[in-house]
Image 1 (tube, one colour):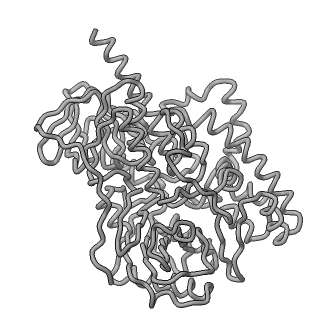
Image 2: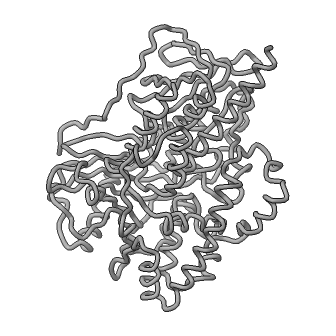
Length: 515
């Protein structure tokens, strides 16, 4: 096995005194935290962002080992319109900040009887569907036309709201549009109106699997993800997903955001009436009239706030339906694997039993579905010449406890199946392997129950039913995957922008009150 891996470090703005002041503090340099800080700076505020680790990214961190560059978290670049709008809003251009490549095929789904490639071209995809189920190409177009309506309504009328109250959605136009969102029908039933072949159903249901519930428990609203996946496309930023973080940091710094790394927050302070700042583990204090928490919502509220300011109690959090955690492996292979594509979904076993272990019994699965990303298929710069950079993932129930040897057992099972389908040995050529699961999600991100993706997007955990952006403590706000609008990189960008606007409104009102 290899030498010690080394995470890529960024220079940090060093805090020289034990007491510092700011107009707005942001905790956590993940996607939502950076977006919130940038939004506040754009609106004219002095913003300081405090990050526990030695570089930005949150779950989208990166590390290097044995000549490989591994993205630690998100690997799918979907909803490119959200990124385009984000950079444009702050005076930049996504195509100047990132070198984006549209993947074709978008991904490959491996079934027991062989792979099905998902081409980027819609007509080619309809032909693929027709080859599996005659007439399903027309059904796919109808399904996507309906999904496009949901996507446009959702993006323009719903996700940009802070969801403090149901009254935000109580306009005639919103109510009229909501009838098109099929909120009360399950995704599973909705998909079966169009398709019957089980392979096509698995392909259609795939984008919602990581939303945190079975397709039969997920609202049909989320067919909008199929529009994002199929029509808007699957992309890759050359250099890896962390390049998105680097670009966001560049834009934020241009707006005046000051980044402070190795800053671990001990508590959020108040004067009995409103937030006053934060105290770090090393004793340093920061004062500010507003604080935005981009760290794990549960951790911040339950561990950094006094009891009287907590909106939710332990029973509330235990009753939440969480999206999956994951068992991850970062693997460097000293050999190319020709039959793999950039994104590979192994659906060669039934999803039902695996889904039950995630959402019902909360146990370790037998014969799990899994995902393998090989970004070196697209990007030669993230692996040594002639090598493959690989990322393995099994979705798991949150809150599971590791047993000795269990991770290697699952890795060997994935490799057995992978090697069978690609027709070559992989394990003898592995020169680097690192695992990451519940324990590391809790240690590195203080993730509630070791979750990887946030709250499940069930109907009762959508919009104003999610944990609130606004704390009971005036001046404190929350952003990220455990609040509005939900899990995923694009929703996290939107969450940060929205909460930045809410914190700005608070600062304006407070300034008027002081005057």
